Length: 414
Length: 120
Image (cartoon, rainbow over all chains, first blue to last red; front, side, top):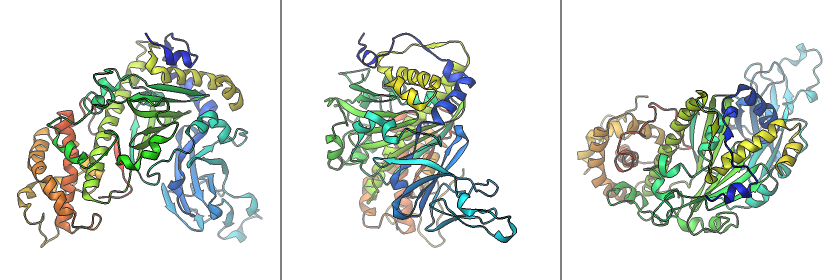
């Protein structure tokens, strides 16, 4: 058997332990050594498009609620969403826009979107509070290529650019279509977060699990298993390219699919845009980096929990957030154009409906896998070459969980 | 979740010429992608097939008719017809792809939510 990718990644070929998927102790290590000190995705800069816009994101594994703001001078900042008075949450909604200030709904303590404490109600009854020292607790925050990241370690010394390293250079300047408009698919799953990572990290399952929904477009007579077209490895991050069936077309009886795609010159069934709108995207050196003739999409995994997937017809993301060892939050965002006609809305409804079915096929499956692994009937996974990302993720996690610092973990992965 | 499209007193259910589809409006003309997905998943294959068989032959004509109205500001009857066209995309997942009302072997109701920035 071909083992090109696993060799190229410098990995062994033996069985891989299932213990990290079911171990509470390993979960603690993931919290302390991974999520509490790596850079974590928060969203697109367009999510806080205008000065005054804000979003709130949860990092459940670290018990953190994060307030991201765009303040004067267009500066994007992150704070713990916690009032300095008695610790209540300042912002209770997921997003919004307040041009000047945040006011805690408990006792009206008021903060600027730069985090400064502006006013304390009934201040004269306090005992000499130094307002300059009572702002919102800042969190390290930086933007790479339009993506907002935070780092929850206040003593972190690794910049976002250094953290992304070669992966950041590889993916930089991709001309993302419709970065300001997305449709989100959200679900909570009774499974360890890594089953979700794995579910979206290999193509081996596509012709089987998704035999009706996307199997016919991700495999075909020339490659029934839909083998990987390419793989690139950068520190803890990596990128793979998937096979696409160049001969895919809806069958005669798929009348509605034909109607939805009528007048739609698109790359494949995962296209949210017309072909001419994505020419620049497809021309980027790191989109289909192997320049395969039979390509469908790239899976770009930014460690630990962010997938930035690019296809010929557009892009989407997966965020996978651990909550407990066997409970996780999953969010997929499809970046889609704003429909301007009924036909465009009909195409988009069909596109998202199919993807919701695909995602549900994966999500129902991860809960079954959780049960199987938790039963302890088996102790090791047997992985093939096309599952290289799963093997590499486990290898990377093992390195991170034993490394004293983020710097050392990154050195181990170099 | 119990979603039904409502008709304002004195208003037609659907535009003139589409009366034959009126029996499907209350169930299928609901606003919102997540709600339409829910309707498809919360009924039987027989009901989905009945809607599909009635709606598909009129879908192209309905879209041609609706192009004359602003997408985000349609009068009641036109808005309901548009939502039925969009529901056809949902119904087609069962009829043309899965061969069953819902994703086979997946729990229902599931926790999957489609969250959109606007509600068509």
